[in-house]
Image (cartoon, rainbow, N blue to C red; front, side, top):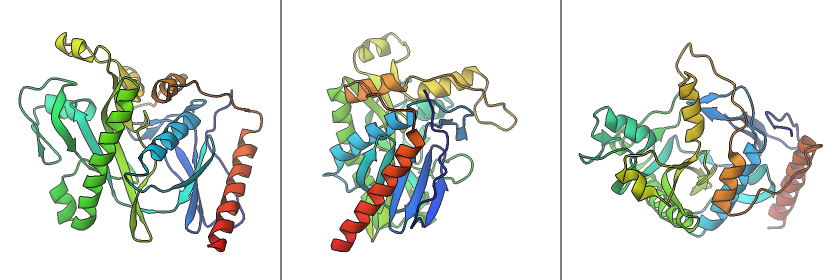
Length: 313
């Protein structure tokens, strides 16, 4: 089984290229093609070993959720022509990520445990324990760092520093809560709890679009609904469906993204299990023999087709 660690395509009409932590992005004027590679990152560090199937699992989960939410919030996608590829509008991203939390878990719990009772300017009640449900979902934005770690930031600080205009930020908050409500409903249908997630937004021709992946186990944390209450009463860890298992494995192997720490090499992760639980179906087979050639041809065909449609309009 092969893994897609990097792509190195050179398309006619290509206007740019960007390699992110886990995606390779090819630009074609106002369009872009995003390749979901099998790279895996944690603590804002790319791990040395790519995980086979990871990219197509997350790309297909994202495609499903983008389709399910497009009537609530406009998104950037025009086509998903390949299991590893999404094509859509090139948007100018906002420099903040909208993190929304329904439960006290992960980073929020670590801050709370350290004694903080406010996160990104949002007050937190006393007396909570790890994985408790919050009184209502809270938005805890982060700055979107090109290098290094993202950082918590409050709504007031975003507006004060004019990172996002007040009008646009109000729209981002509205979209974030709508998406989280829908994501919670979709998760419940699969006997899951959407604990927290992040959304990214950008602008294209003055319109705000939801961009990047949505409600995937890489961008979201899920609990299994069955047994949640019993585990909380017994002060037991919750059964999770998320990338948290990656972070925990790294912590156990003495890595948290800090300077001087050696990055351990991770073995195959549980992405097929994640796909089956979130989508309710098994991951289909794929031909690995000509994977890069398939992806390259798919992008070329899709961009050519979209350009022809644009000219007709």
